[in-house]
Image 1 (cartoon, rainbow, N blue to C red):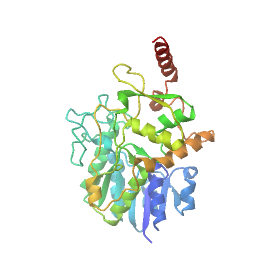
Image 2 (tube, helix red, strand yellow):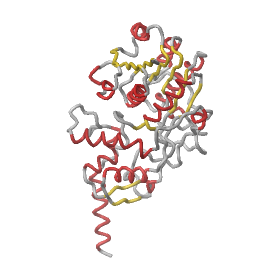
Image 3 (cartoon, rainbow, N blue to C red):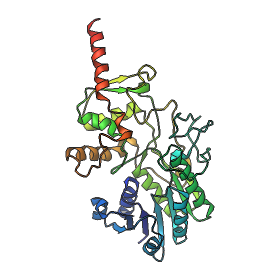
Length: 350
């Protein structure tokens, strides 16, 4: 039986990888700090939880034991984290470091987290320009991507068989930032209409955690040192995502496309961008990777989880809270209602 260890294995990416591998017959262990966060479906699949802090070098080496077939690090954020991963990777046949699309920059140096949205010429290949490596505050605009680049460099400079994966806007059960909540919450709140900035034409490539899991098994079977983009085989617009979600949940609303310049504070979604941001996944496909499904197919489980969690009153506060800085800007219902009221009055006077 092949053996896998997933560092940070109870989050959206780790749990998808663990479940995929366990279902395929692997012996899987996941690490975390709180056993209470261990998903029930992983327990049912025979996945073992090991309580260990990601910074505890001695304990991590003890957990690793005599060696592994696969080591996956879902919580490697800095160059320092990567140095620990390299130590462990010496004892693994294949190693995976989860990075991010956030490392890429356009010709002006803009990236996913910069104030100015990046403008790319086409699908991003793994050879595209990235941010300079850094050792910054991970919560700052510059920090996350720069720190990930530093981690990538440490891993690849080691000469070990470490695959660096770069996903984009990950979705799946257990996501800490479930972007689809922007539409799912509106369905639950029985909103009669949805406003869509930029006419709902924004495209930022999405990545199902299930598709990451499929690629992880592929690179486990074919160890090597490489960088691979990972994203869904399709890239729907914000408007198409809205329609997919309402169709799945059996709900109908009026769709109101807006020109963002006319209404800069209305209709925002997580997929807004002046130009499409997509990833070239040809290198992964060339290795033999086969997606678990397209966006519509793979996002259903997450959306059902969002609905069931909300209807349970969310005692563990798994869903975004009203004061969440990221999500609060998407739910300005009073301003939306004023917009609807004004336009209804205008129509009644025609």
